[in-house]
Image (tube, rainbow, N blue to C red; front, side, top):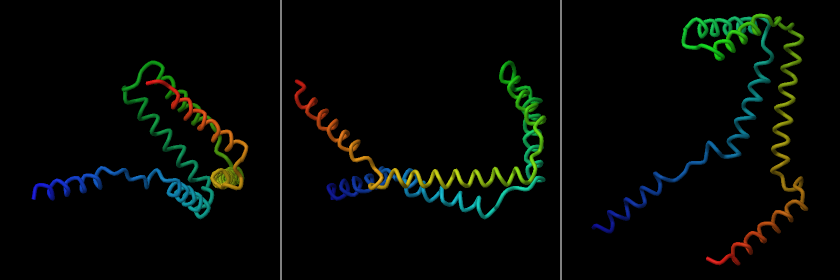
Length: 148
């Protein structure tokens, strides 16, 4: 009875303590990047009024932080400079917003392609792979020869 209980506890603890790598998995990261890209394509570029609303919201948040009294010295000066910079920027035209959106989508697609290319074996550099194998062999021999 005691052995069964111990075996059950060990088995359950193995399942409970096992690492779940789903969030860190490359496939899930690639999927999330694809979802973000598809969402950006479906939403399209923001309108000028949305950009102005975001700008006013950022200014209101910075005003709230500045007026809170929680910050002083260099941090307060940095917040004031950020607020001035946002307040002094001109609102872009819809054409500029569209160009930025298209550039963002192009960059996202290029980043996804480069990650796929890095993982694909036919694009790997065989000379570099051979050098890495040789280095691993050398390190393994080095540690085997080391006296304990």
